[in-house]
Figure 1 (cartoon, one colour):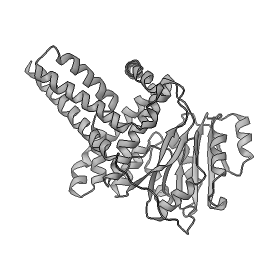
Figure 2 (cartoon, rainbow, N blue to C red):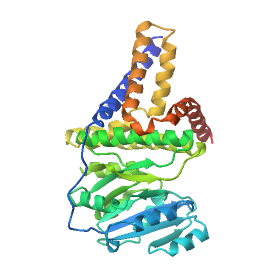
Figure 3 (cartoon, rainbow, N blue to C red):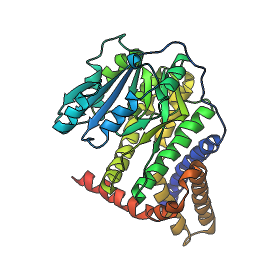
Figure 4 (cartoon, helix red, strand yellow):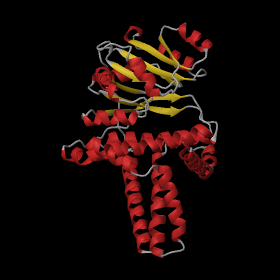
Length: 374
């Protein structure tokens, strides 16, 4: 019983730290902060990389969106990495004034496509590399805003992704998850003077730095590895809350399970590969990097919610003090999520989507166990 009591105390301590961490940044995200930079006379050169894996239904809209930019057309190149797109889609894309790189990787990944494209580009050819998803569309002033931000001295920039269409419970929950991330991991951080987290879509990075450092990346790496490299070098990641990237694709349940399982896996991979650097990051004043390692240490929100629900209900049958602390922590967590969720998502579909969370969470856990068994 004493051993179980220590386990319960340890879990509560980690859960409490996680909730406190999320709450601080959720509250910070409510502060007003302008991300408007003065117009730059210099028009920097963009390399816009769009990896497209079986995205035949969306990639034409993404390309057209960038061809309609107010930014000078001779100051940016659109580079589509076509991976397993249909021949007719490739023929359609070939009609546009873009660079089309065709690949058929045996084991496809976004990073593999980005690395393939970067290997074709010369040092000094561009100033900024912009990484997009194949289902992203943007406003006509998008490149102008990113250019102004870069000209002000920001070498790494994350824009604000929004899910444009939300026809199903899964798509609504995806949108809510993304916006909570935007609030806590991005807006809340920059409002407190810390770097924003990257999400791999609408991400702009200094071309020279990216060209030099992409050689350190593996084919299955994601934006967390890029983050750790940036923060180790004290490169601040700016967040443009009012500069939107509109995601068109709606994920089904299978994609939802796989995506969230992958997020959890990459979070702990990032933690284990960086945790040894935490003392050095703190002592050397690399507080952005130290914060990111702590961010990877805390429980993912899905796991956190499961633990809080389980112990809250179990505590009813034990001591009243345990009941109070677990229920208090659960309510604080729910309040934190409410603070971090923007008002535009709280509509008639919101309550229905909330009721689906237990079933989707159970499905995700089952999917993780099944994948591990395989």
